[in-house]
Image 1 (tube, helix red, strand yellow):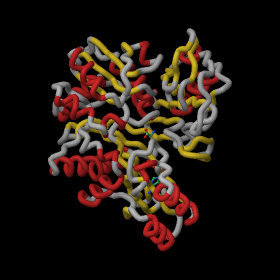
Image 2: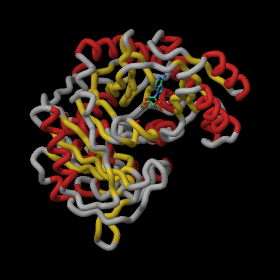
Image 3: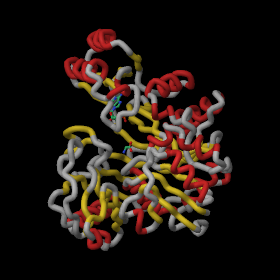
Length: 421
Ligand code: AMP
Ligand code: GLY
């Protein structure tokens, strides 16, 4: 199979790495890729949102399967565009990608299909939103309706904080059009986990689970990020809770999408809160998480390419995914300043030494090669991962690898995995 992975983050490096191990693979490209993907795939200089150029490339190269990493191209319709050109794409249509692209779409689907989620209301008018928040009181959650790259959610501890978010999103347009409409919802309490399912439109099979660390600082403090580290499996998600999630959240969502004539194919990522009343859906994403994907790929024992292929061809019911019993952990190395403006083009040394720690693996994200040196080029720069006989051993190996990096301008959280340890 000739395969094109789309994206340039740690997630896509992990996907390329896993796909490159498949005996079914004959050729692998990554667009636009990074120095990590370049070790296992040929780099294609086309951006993730240049859908027309990506389709032209896929047709010219007779690509058998396209695997988009990020949500942007999916919401913009890359699966439809590839499909129209006769190219298989493991991702949802633009309509089905609304499960991530629009909070309102998902909340309405939750209500229609009876999925457990936080009570909610949608507002297009800031005064009405403010009145609602005052009536309900804090804590309360204010969310921009559209895609906002992780910046569209404020978990407000006070009414004043919620009102400030309403003013910023709805009145000042701080997130552009994405925040002109907002969803305001009940604040859920519990432990958060990311649960993944591979879907072929009618069937879904579990594709692992992980726990992310969204806040930038140790002890879950500071601003939200795209994710500062992850581990898998999360002990909080028992086998019974995983089955409950498939039965009460994933499968009913799939059934409702199919009933509407817009079946969901690809990777469905349920962000859950494990509350005292059982798992509740915080949000759906229509792709792997980053950094969750990196730790899942370290534990995956099955052939990822064949699994993705089975999802695209509607043959998932024959497929079972096998996992290593060993847990994996991933520590994100970010450039100072992240999640604000990150310092760029600082030299990174020691990557090979880090990867040489037994059990360790370093995935690239915001890196580039400049004048022959590896430098940072984004906020999240590397995901330093390791597997171990138990989570403590995996964590020790991952931080040992971090310790071998020579990158003074980088930082990481020092407590990844703390909830499970
Ligand atoms: P989202 O962009 O929807 O993933 O939200 C970002 C983060 O905000 C989530 O990972 C949660 O930590 C938090 N969050 C979102 N919705 C809620 C909620 N209803 N109750 C509590 N926390 C929430
Ligand atoms: N790590 C969370 C996400 O990818 O959305």
